[in-house]
Image 1 (cartoon, rainbow, N blue to C red):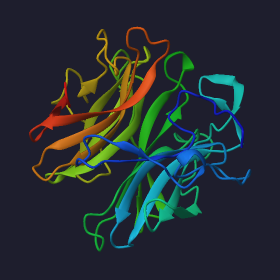
Image 2: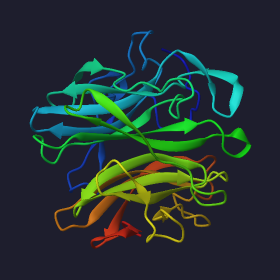
Image 3: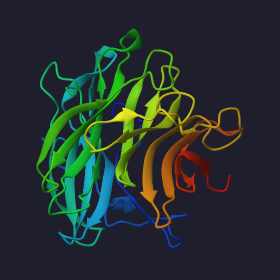
Length: 314
């Protein structure tokens, strides 16, 4: 639409694809079918919720449907004030999730959304429903689909806002019902006092693990851990890291490396041997760089210990 999003530093705009030939250790960009090689673009309908910018939340192949499902989120032309800046009206602020479907994982069609809408005035998620992460049923005949999402609530230190995460459930992956807020900010002064934002859920040995991006008001972003017995009620893990929830992975501050500013946006895979692999967003500024750079990093658990992680090639 030619509209600059409210935060140009966000990893949003258009959606691309990268492929790996070595089991997910290294990736190369794939040229998609859209201009400049993109895979999926904002809607060209100016009345749509996702016509300004979009970003991928989750994508996977569903064997029972024989289709690829792309859960994403986007913002439209509605003007809203930024949390913490009530006098600053911006387009693209009201983030909501959508769903697109593909038969081959490359050409996406049948765009739907928003599949979850923001809460009513006064609700905890009235400011947005962003970054949907979806867990498919382990048994499609008895289990439900689970979606986690987050929003930025008003309030917090100096009314700057804070992040909270919620859960929604579905019987078919298309029609969703909110179950409420499940995690929020830590106590003042803790590593996640600014809240719980981007997160990813996996099933592991009869439990559910949520790896989440936490932050403080010094703009430090790290990755923490919460657990659940049913995927609906969550508590921050007390056995990992120096504080509740962690962190289990954080930026390498003080080192001349690519991820020395921010570590967040976790995506976790359980491998056949029971170990776990975590892809994450890193932001850093190496000596001589004029500006920070974003990249995707990889860490692995120490065996089956999901609380202890090391970076690959570290």
